[in-house]
Image (tube, rainbow, N blue to C red; front, top):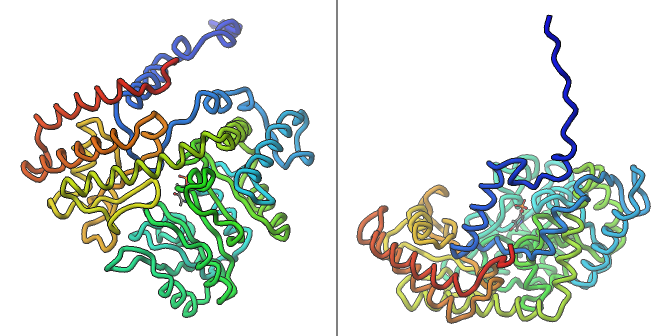
Length: 435
Ligand SMILES: *Cc1c(COP(=O)(O)O)cnc(C)c1O
């Protein structure tokens, strides 16, 4: 019988092959993704472009390290440098957002919110969140999400006339349903949040106030949106949106009474070992956000969003609620009778990347929608200013007009011309030029 020859693993290749040699398929897909990020204009409001330093930390040897537990109290040996990294991430997060405590271990935005639910609620408890159709997030009570399946969500929405949140209505709903937790914050709401008014409602009914500032935390860090502290009991945030860090989440609070329940909820309640390479990348991003130039970036994001919204309105489409105070906006496509689905595809053909999004009181399904959501963080990071965003607004409307004239196939000639114009614009603002 033939015996299988046992070959020694090729350790020289293991230590020295770069990705292109080790895995050409994945390397090629990454190269194409880099080209896509360079050559198209990124308008997805929840995306950004992280620095080279953030990417380097995220791709570091901390990938190898288990560090269950917290700094100084780990369940594994060899955590000296993991402790250095996590302590710095915590210190910097507290300094950046001016609060007393931080948990930097949540692996994602969804997990950070689940951890707060685990810390403060029991299954079946009533909580309040912004309605999905008014710009709320999946984890704030969607029927298909755990928050909506295992808890009892009550939604507040935006007014039909102003398309803004009505704090009298929030108060009335809270008094009627007596939620144990109220969530302020959303994914597609472009107006300033009145945290103080939410605090009043929470106090009136004896609820915890949780602010999920995922979308706007970069603006809060840079002083371009009011801080939820000292009003919120607990604040959660993703770190990869306007904050411009790695894909991840954080939980922040001021009162020591929340420390044990929140830390216990994250680990061992929700997660095992933290992603220490991502914790390291978060620390790097927080340091970047503490630099004075981050304030300039945050204010530029808002100024650019105003320029984009104004340009789209000047060219004939409607912005939900009549404008924006932050990084994002919803465009109502119904004046041109175009769906969000068709617009997302047409704009992508023209190298403008965005997502379809329901508008308040949308009559179309979430798979079709009557709107698109746009955001300025990624474009601002690559260096676009109001002049570029005004051009982008005009391009968007031209693509939508083509869809309005010709149906879902759009106007190929217009799309071809805009692809060229996008190319010219992008050439002046390179992304990762050294890579
Ligand atoms: C993006 C987002 C989340 C979830 O983040 P993931 O990392 O995608 O799980 C939670 N809440 C809000 C408000 C968000 O915008």
